[in-house]
Length: 374
Image (cartoon, rainbow, N blue to C red):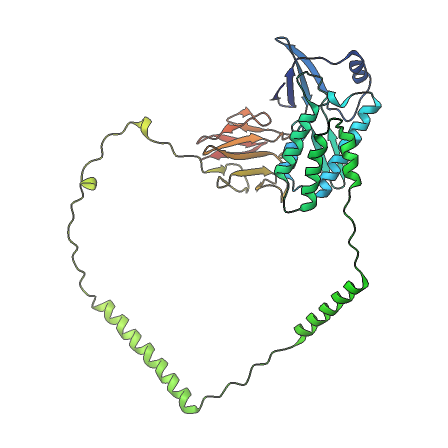
């Protein structure tokens, strides 16, 4: 199976290509019922292969979600609970989990506040292994999460172990992990009393005021002597500086050294041999104020949501997570993150996850916000 991305002015698509068709019962079930958990799609046939075109306009894949968000235990549990609810909907319509694409690119997440929803892709193509696909999800989780959080790390490894079972089921895995919750911390009366004693001691220590000992007073003669010494230093310093200004010392002549490299004319060099300077920044070319984008990091995210992006563009047409610039093999590549109004390079609309190597004088549009690569 092969996955590619296509885009037009209104829609963004993920295209899964391979061999295999849906069973007659499932085709009728999907045609006669609007199953909310599935992304809308249509199919085409080309060179003996079936192509499933999923409408992913405005959607965010699990891969991007894990990269862009700071994943916590609450986030991960919410995603797993949403996956479990989605699989239970599939059971109601008698659609097997093996017919669903469970990968970091085939699961789409919408997480806002306390609500989390997932969208899945119905994919009956052959040469697929649902369990192996979900193992790749757990491996991606282990690579992305903060390993300093022991509880979160344990959840990821438990999920990976669940995916190795012969009788693996995403519904069962989600239910087992939902049952494992951290035990509440109980503070006993003794611990509470210790905390109060420490707090009281801290407050008493803060209340104490340190008073320095009274310094010895200088006699009248010592203060007068100190003042005369200061005047003398100021007077002598001014006379010395004035003398150096009026009567500068002659400079020593330096020995002449013949340098053949500087005196001889440089040899002719072909223009093709000159290395062109690399792109170092994107300069804003629109009206109003907007920051230039300095290409100084390995990964730069661009969007309208503060706190989650390296560069925040507060414009109505810019999506929350609009585009990304990554350094690959000493070159900077621009890619769209399935933004609503698109990312353009020299007038060409970029497809989702389609990398474009930035060149000098490229004109970049994030929706209608114009930049120039220099």
